[in-house]
Amino acid sequence: MTPLWLGIDVGTTAIKAALYGADGVQVSYGECASDVATPQPGQSEQDMDQVWQGVCRAVKQAVQSVDVARIESVGLAAQGDGFWSLDADGRPNGPAILWNDTRAAANLAELSAADLAVIAQACHTSLWPGTVGPIYRWLKQNAPERAQNVAHIMHCAGWVGYCLTGHMAVDFSDASIPFLNLHDGQSHDGRYSDSALAALRVSDLKSALLPPQSAQTQLGLISAKAALECGLPAGLPVSVGTLDLSAMIVGMGMDQPGDTMMILGTTAVVNILTDSITPDDRPVGATAFHANGQTLTRILAPTTGAAAFDWFCALHPQTLGGETPAEIAGKLNALAKDVPAGANGVTFLPHLNGERAPFVAPDATGVFFGLRTTSTKADMGRAVMEGTAFSLRDCYMSECGHLPKTTIRLTGGGSKNALWCQIIADVMQIPIEVSGASDHGLWGAACLGAAANGKGIASQIAKRTEQSIVYDPTPAHGPAYDAAFATYRTLSTAAQSLWTQPSKEMQ
Picture 1 (cartoon, helix red, strand yellow):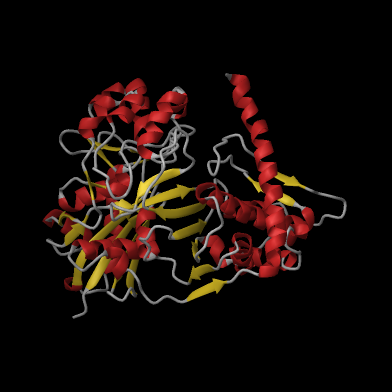
Picture 2 (cartoon, helix red, strand yellow):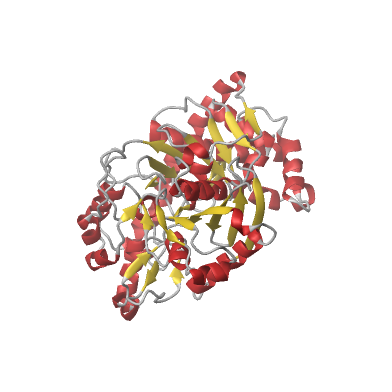
């Protein structure tokens, strides 16, 4: 009887579960939608019990046609950050406040540069409102009874693990922001920063924080109650839950400093693994531990990725519209493919929704530069695709100081666009590898569960045979893209003074 590993990935809008063999082949799959409530503008919440029920439905769907006696282990991954709290009785003391909730923006803005520097020195992250500290500050001011009733701080993965086993835990990835003393990946002591807690005026929260553990360790065994609700055998080992991004990195078999992965989804992300960080009072992006609790991940996430492509196509419904994303992409690609590198002098800054990496500017906007009477829709479409690629290059070079030297893995919806992948390879001047698989987060979670059950190191057992396409850079395009990127960076740098001006006038 071939054993199976169960992976669970609890996203913000969808909950997924899948069974895998040790070879990484997906045997079965289940999915359940997850509702997000917006009681007021800027607020984003989920009922924690409903999230658990969604997990049960997804798991039941995944195992309904399989002999559950074959399942050996369960691994967990989920959305990160936000505020998932329990009272002294181990029950949710209110809805989960999610990572994209902005109610605490004013509380974050109240912090001085010195306060932010203290926090940055601990976690090497530029905070946003949807993190534990700012949200707790907001609760203390606006919902003091709930704040006083917080006994345990969970994360989404920790909440699901608690429902499965009755044990509470947080892994190093989820614990990283905003209070963990990161130091470097080799000497980390697993302690929270008293200075960071004090800078956020939430020192009273420390007693509710759980000591971080490796996601490759066992959280506990599935209880009889949870087994009945999920359709699983009681007593199955469950791993300590981790951040979904960390699970994706594990699922790609990445764990070495220098390994780089990019996501071209609605937003974009550049993830660079490192074994050390240089303390900075004003870091760009975020830093979180790899699921192994040793290597660090630098996370630089431009606000606009494939959303820029969708926006441009939506402006031209007659010529660039379609029934499916593939049809729409095919129409723009047909226009842009014959436009030379550099888009005939048209440059696009893709900051349509503000920006958070490699610089932070909430008021940033999209910009077309270099338009002439001879400029065409094709030039502009090509510039949109190049602009997002320049954004990725800008993030990488801002972090590393040079172009990448080894192949970069690319995933996300935009990675299905062959022309765009080639543009990214040419702009980054390094091969871009795109896997045919799109389940790395689920597979990574399953491997972490197996690792917690003694099957080996998660990122090593995650290596599987995948059909991949490698886009090699076109050497002849290198000089053109170096020049176009120099223009892009000059424009972006100059525009930042304009984007920050409204904030200055309000002070």
